[in-house]
Image 1 (cartoon, rainbow, N blue to C red):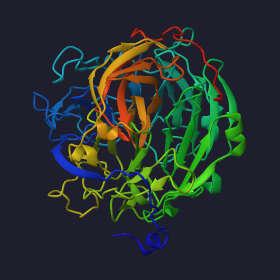
Image 2: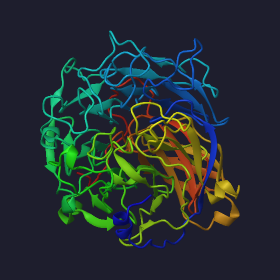
Image 3: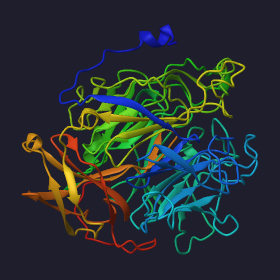
Length: 575
């Protein structure tokens, strides 16, 4: 039940124009709790859990903590893993391999005993080209003795960068609600390691300054090739080539913090040619001080409604954060950027904090949060201040999705919604002797706009290139329904990101330059790897706000990282 304190703070819901109506449908059970979720192909999503005694079993009868979700049949098949995958990060590299890094210490929480320590883990998957996930490359490769990180990392962030490798930052040696100097990994490394930096890390003043709320730093590559990092209530622009902090941005306004355990969300909005000016939103979280003790924290502490936005140009930073508000408080939310450029916000709670039960009054519920947020929010990224945020046409799910929930865009153009487990064990409805709140969740839902639900006319891609060099042209054969032909046409190049803990690392949308002649759509790839990193991507065609199914494309030459500079430089205003 929602507290009266929370209800008193609910502002009015805003109206929006041109809003699709969405709906939920529940289909299938995941077999593991996929708190890490990655869209791999039109038919497959990769799922990682922690070593619970899950219902999904390996061929030898052992419980699985990794698996493939079959988007066409709504079923799961197990994958064998060696290390503890819990609380990792990752992304695709330039040759199409998916890499997951970091994880949980071996004996942090009792679970299925066959996992080894995952904090230095590197897990390689793919490229997997078979539709059913049974062909070459469709297994997780690990060799902990020879293939591992330099430092132990629980709750790190990994971001795809311009040379096709991963930039890995932060984390902790052990499980913790707040990070601390004696356990924090306030440093960076690369995978693969950069020449001359093998076996070493780069110390980070920014991560040190943002203790104790700097786990899973919200980070993204800007069109300059620099990295934006947001942790606690602070932000920095970092030059990875010179190992230099270029600029600290203004603090998030009004004492709001979005780092763990306050757990707001951040999202890079679409990049559009010719200038590709980056704008970022950072929303939700809490305005509690980072000196608060666990005993002082409550599952009923109301989260923030504040939703701030900044454009990362000299003029944008001088103007500072532009403040808007969500229609309700939100902590632990997911953000799914849509092919149209709008952002669907879902899951999480209205009150409390992230993490396993540790705050002062968590004993009664067995969780750190209460008051689940079961209705989503749409952020219309191109509308003016005061008109961007709405719940019109947005449904309410019957399933609470709290800590350890996940959501990702699929090739079909809908959103797969899965997982939730705020407990350090599997808690089912028929095995809950203490009547704790929010049992472990295996049910999978799909969230679809009305044009998918109703099978309405939408753009159809019948032919597309499998690979595009930077700054090169390619042709797509597309059918645009007459009912949509008068509207705006967009071509979206996308990475859905590595989804975990309310943070979609690497999530990115670049609008491509294009011309349409009859059914032939000529597109131009991003000019270089700073705009979109080399490696896998998805293309969607959007007509009058209605998008096609997605098709896969390899951007760049598909070689192993680090790749030499590809494409051409462009004039940009991004910091």
